[in-house]
Length: 274
Image (cartoon, rainbow, N blue to C red; front, side, top):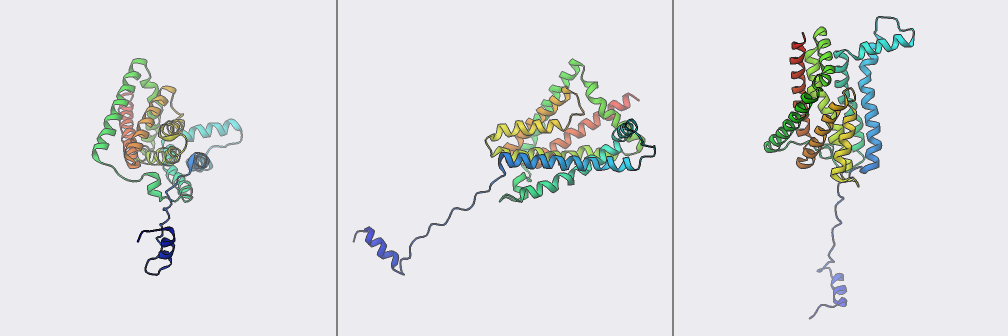
């Protein structure tokens, strides 16, 4: 007997031949997209800076000298903000200040916190690739700095911080802040939250890498333009690795190694300058 539409209807009414049900497609994981990522990103950056300003406000309240005028306030701010202890505590406070708003932002998606940010490790081959690429980039910029005379200018900020850290006995805290806390907080924001949302928008992966690297570079305005170009190029490389490996842990580790190398170089320069 050949199947006909009427036969199919009759079969569907037969308890022995129940109608086939097509399971609905599961909800695909969704990210926040461009605009919501941008708006949440602004809020995250604001909270991040508030967290970093908390130690400055604390030391300002405990300041010994009188602050009765604007010039005295500005002088006290410069003295406090230029201390390694203040800068280190600000970097450490940036970690919870980043994590809290990012957590609430990701709750608006169907993805887990770890999956959204790429909190997973990758293979050692990718790690080796990341190290080699970072060394090549840093080597090229170091050569360019020596040829143009920017090497000493770019390191002066870190040298001054290290001198105050030695005076306060907080070199260890400076190492933790620059080599652990700063990489964690900055990578969570740039290659974690911002890249993830923007890569699924009209920017696609290349635009997300460039834009997140630009915003990451803006966080380092204490350096001169030459050093900022260095920072941006590293950001692009980290962004590519984030795309290639889907691992934020990799960029965190590489970022920390880069800062550790810069800290060791600063110690060497400071010892040479007395």
